[in-house]
Structure formats: C-alpha cells, structure tokens
Image 1 (cartoon, rainbow, N blue to C red):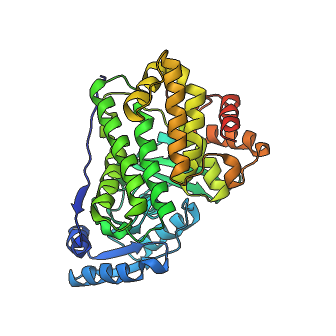
Image 2: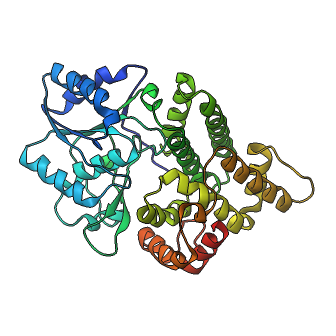
Image 3: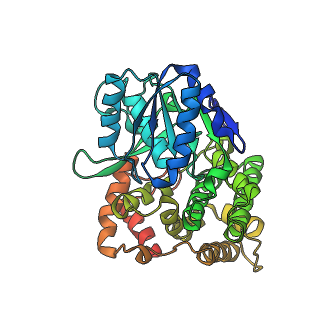
Length: 388
C-alpha cells in the first residue's frame, strides 16, 4: 500500500424528505443562490420544494436550466458570466451527474481567469471556486462526492469531452433522498448503477490489497443484486438507497486509497457518448467486457478471482479458464438486465473506431490510455473491435 492523503469534505444529508433541509444548508454560504438544472418536466414538483426551502431560509433565488447529457462548456461559460453579473454566492445543482458536473465547472470558471482547457487533466490547479451544493436525483456517477467534472468542449473543433480535476470543485453539501430516484426509467437506473460498478473496477483491477479487493467485490456484488431487484421493485426505498450509497461510495476514492487506478475504460467510452448521446453507463456496459477480454492476461490472478468470488463461476482447471468464464458470465448478466453489450446496438460502426481511439488518447492527455492498462491507439481500436 502506497502513501496517500484522503479527504472528502462534502457534508451528506441523507434520508426521505431531506430536500427540506436544502435552504438551511445553502444559507451557510451566502444569500444569493443559483439553481442549476436541465429544465425537465419531471423536476417541476421538486424544484418548487427546493425554491420553497431556499425562500424560507431568506435566500434570493436565481435559476439557469438547459443542461444536456454530457454537459456543454458553452452553457458552463454562460452560467459563469451570470454568476459574476448577479454576484451569486452559491450554486445549487438539482439533477443527476450531468447537472452536477456542469454546476461544478460553472462555479470554478466563475472565479478563475483563463481558458477552460488550461485547467483540465491536471494541467493547472486552483483553490478558488464558488461554493456549490447539490440535490441528487439520479444515482450512478458519484459526482456528488468526486473532485471531477466531465465537460464537452463544444466551443472548438473537434468537439471533445474533457476532465476537470480540481479539489476546489467538490460539493460543500449533498442532499441524498433515494425516493427522488424512484421515478427514473429502469434503463436509466440500471445505466447509473453500472457506472458505479465501473468506478469500482477502475480501482479493483489495478491494485493488490486484500482489504481493498474485498471492499470492491462487496460493492460490485451488492450493486448487481440491487440492479436485479430494482427491475421488479422500482419504487422500493431500500433498494434505491443501496444503489445510491453504492454510487457515492464507488466514486468517493475510498475504495482506491493506497493503490493505483486506471480509468482506461472511461477514456475509451467518453468519445462514444459525446458522439452518440447514449447514456454514459450503458455505453460503459459495452466497453467493460471488451476491455476485460483484451486485458485479462495482464492481471490473470485478479480476473480469475473476480470470476470465482464475484460471478461465482469456476470451471476448474486454469486461472485463464476461470477468467474467461467470469467475463462470459458478467456479459450475460448485462444482457439479461437489458443493457447493451455491442457497439452495433447503439449505431457505432467500425469506420468510427480510429477517430474514437484518437479522441480517447486526446481526452486522457497521453499517448497511452490508462495508468495501468497503458493502451496505445491501435490497442484501443482492438478493444472496440471486440465490442463491435
């Protein structure tokens, strides 16, 4: 286990009806609050409740909507200008991962000079950021606990998703009411849950710590069990609560402290969702089994352990046979719950592979993608072929 510094400064307010406390939490950071959301009709009742809580706390409320899946830099910059013009004290994200990422980037750019690209991929760090909080309506991305905002730069060509990694953008508070996620379509729920599983995998297949391995395996198994259960009981509060807490834990960094992490899977997936506007987690469901098939030989013991302890399969014989059986079982799980497992299912063709691979490398900011996988552009193309 390597040396590390670990801090999660976010204050979490969890429970049914916890949104009534949003005014109390936001009031800690000033009087002028900007609510940021996607403008969807599904939010109408919730937004009224949020406004009421803010007004009752004596706060002045402003709003900016328009967030789309894979949030756009153009809206971030528009919001940053609005924050400066109206002297906003705190931004409140109401929504899922895209809204949360957009709010974090907006809060950061409102008080930092220069171009957005100067700050992405650890190029330049700043401790300045407007206070930002959130009311989470979709569990999966774990943006409520991370120091990351994934933003599509639509202000120049080529359009590319870029990662903003800044500790300053962490939420000051997060309102977590699992009942708010119960109205989501099942496909969206499962997509978010698989995103959480992938966050765990980015740590799990890299390290070699028994403690961290068992923690990662427990989160993956519990999340898979609740993904199966939520299909039949979509409004069950306890199932929703487990999925929400799994998502928060998965991206908290706790499961990766003291060891390396990879993120090749996410970098390979990002160009695809940017181009196709598919749900992030659904596209990850396509990439993960293909990445496993391409890379399992690089850490055979870990993949065999995943097969035996997580997937409960062991055909006997070699670790290689076990690893392959585990990948097959995992892909079968994804297909049975209704997530896609082939790029052809979402309209991606082999002619796009080379461009997506180059964009994956550009998003990662390195010639080799993944801290552990270290995939070249030709290797990424091979992963896409396995996913086709």
